[in-house]
Length: 410
Ligand SMILES: *Cc1c(COP(=O)(O)O)cnc(C)c1O
Image: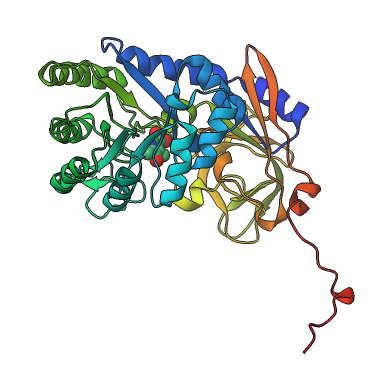
């Protein structure tokens, strides 16, 4: 956890609202995951760009030795700008056009296909490009259907029951399948559920003779609020390592074991700092109204996520109950009836777990600027994105002067 004093200094120096990321925490999480699998010869951790896509964060991931997991051609290009070799980038789109997939293949990234029709078209046109296949193991990992993507009704992946059809396409087109992949969702509560899904992945992988890697996706859970369960990475590493080694022995080849964590690497490294504009007593509660809204951090409204909130301006104060809300002209509640150290106007609140899916989901709703981002690295704060300005709001708009427009000739 970063010190309150450090966070306060950053808010003073760079203004607020502001996102702050602790590079040391990112590194610690990366090392924790890699060391849990240090008995596997080839391990690849591909960071999921969509969690937090700032170029400096990507460069830091590159420095740590990570690859990238991407879901759009733009993310692939950001990765290349950040210095990644295309072959260290895996592209796992869903519902994109064949054209975009072909463009990404031209860039040289690893293609991961999750649709039979696309697989057949791609294989016909580019039998020489090796492809990974995203399967749907039909396992429900975690309790929240918004973020569980391996279950039967999910739009993601090719059903394991369609494996015969995949094999027929591979044979007919002469394409090579070099990887098998699953990503069962962002909320794995239970290692046993993950291992169960892994068995299904192994069963499928057995049927493909030319594999280089098996990609187990992500879904590592990090604690958001006190008492939350966290995935026991060490226990998980031990169990999956044993199983993976046995598989490789039977398969007759040392495959690469791949993961693609987003949240696990960056969630806890992030803090969102915002100032309290007003404290408002109503008949039912006390509102702390902050200088931000769901335009900057939408997870509580979108997913019901509980980000812990601390008053870093009043460390030693008495605790009281608050509802923390934003300035958007809609209900934008960050927290309901939350115990927080007594809040005054002008205090700075820090939202925890603000590294993953926070800035990347920010918008300009209510014509507000997206905030600055700061990276805390080697005991120094580095600005890695400026706050937007009024010019940014106008940048792509084509302004029509109605008075000078003539009517079309009849
Ligand atoms: C979003 C995503 C991830 C990352 O999930 P986290 O829960 O953030 O770890 C990994 N793989 C794919 C294909 C994704 O879409």
